[in-house]
Length: 310
Ligand SMILES: Nc1ncnc2c1ncn2[C@@H]1O[C@H](COP(=O)(O)OP(=O)(O)O)[C@@H](O)[C@H]1O
Ligand SMILES: CC(=O)N[C@@H](CCC(=O)OP(=O)(O)O)C(=O)O
Image (cartoon, rainbow, N blue to C red; front, side):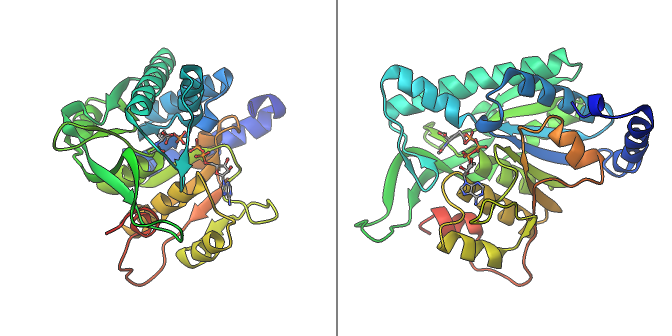
């Protein structure tokens, strides 16, 4: 905890410093993606829940989208099923989908319980509830060696997010906690990368910030050094030379999409740092990588460029 390292004067300064942030963020929506890699430790999960309860109690409107990548992989391993990823997306057959629903459903209830025990008011949602995350099958654009678009099973891309259910909960002061499952017109459930859910939701809710909490200090350069800020032009080069890869691809695509479509800022921060959310939102100490949009129109959005065939 930061507090144990500080003297009384420092603590008072930090509290006083929070006031302008609390004022300017009052009633503002923050979409917070809580990555599975940042929730492998019980103490961190409890700390995250306390931070969310605090943000809610001082008048902000956090919306949580959580992942569960390592937890899903752990369950698949127990089931004797091998995990395979293509461009950061889990190849999802029927058995894998079941594991995704089970592991993320369990995490969802755990996060809801922790927030409620911390004095917040949280409600767990699956994208199938009220048909609010509408999805269709995602096909990956072919890369050299592929004969055509790549079918990765029941992985979804988002068609539309209906925000009515979330707004309804927010009017009664509940914090929505969302697991990354969508539903197709035919009722088919889809496994959706949680970063993509968070980015699309931030845009749909016209959020103040999209915050992606993961297990690195932010976007790292090829020497492992934190990059404090990136734009689309930087990202293209960083992807082309392989510096950004795997799980960072959907994160950066979502963040860029969000900031270019009205979200004021997107941040990739280290969820393993105690009180990371409070540091990011209530102090002048910005942590992690800040993602900014570029000027000028782009024909395709970033998530389309990296994952879609259309
Ligand atoms: N340039 C980069 N900077 C930081 N992390 C990167 C980069 N490129 C790839 N990664 C990988 O992305 C991972 C984060 O994505 P992911 O494993 O999906 O986490 P989460 O569960 O938080 O979504 C990091 O742990 C790291 O292995
Ligand atoms: C399609 C796809 O890859 N879905 C993800 C959903 C969970 C997730 O996104 O978890 P993290 O945020 O912890 O990585 C998966 O199956 O792992």
